[in-house]
Image (cartoon, rainbow, N blue to C red; front, side):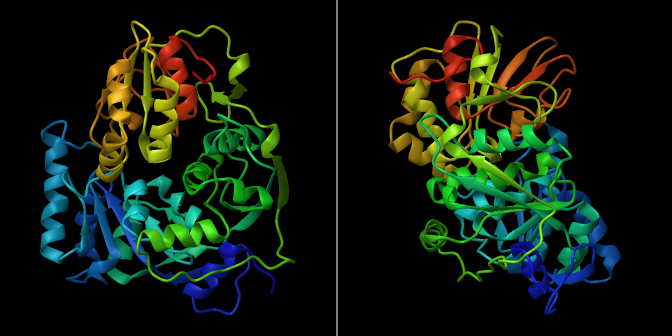
Length: 420
């Protein structure tokens, strides 16, 4: 039977020769992930599965990142529960505040904990990020996380697929964020519901790994079960550079069946922005109009990597954040924070009038470090702009790339980036 990349990974982990869309399978897990919102619930449920210990202490990753550094007593209690469980179970991959901390979906690839061909579940919807490395990764609920920690396997309904063919090369200031927002704008927030977004085409070679992480990260915003890229030399170089396990490469069969095929010409894309209150409400920045803003957030699991920091600094260098605008920069991991410091990027941000935060999801989910008041507007490099996502239900979030976010911070309104 002809299969897609996702279907082949699921078949291999279910120890089956083939699977078909809609089929229910039990598949073994390579990694189970939880954060400080979802893991404490899973930890409370874990004893109900009748096992004293996790299936493999090396294949569990616990990353407090949403309300960390702890914003209040409840947040501290959540992290304390995770910390105690990690110590009790001998969890090898527990990363809290300190040298190894960071936002989970930037940190795990950086630590080499995911490789091509892996099957990963995480109690966080943006676990689909690891599809950039050609892994099948998807978000689950906390109870499913508990079951996965106990049994080392879980069930899946095999998804059908949409093939997204990328051609050409993006122009200056166009990034992976613009690609995925363009795609979501085309098909809508439920356009790939419980399907796999499978990327293909010669244009992939012109996207950096950071671009691919961003695109895979937001597959869920189109309703997809996962997003996945094929393995190429960039993928292999990234895996080697981060000491990941040897990859298992699964390629889609030439005759694999797709529900539909979408073609995107990267040469023709331009910087875009998603207006409130859906990631699909996408417009070119040039058509945004005069929309004054109160805050800019550059960071998150979507766009907090070193290339994002570099692009934002390039736009801001020698300029100042507009009066009345709060600009918050959040490198996604301590390693990225340190690299940004060593490259002088943090100095650029501070001299421009930004505040630089330690790694945290914080403002993305309305947690802390950048909550919006009634009537305020924010341009953010995060992944969601639902009603009340970053604070008051009458605030507004506009999603954009780091280049557009930085340009908007300087202009005091939604603006396109220009070179100095």
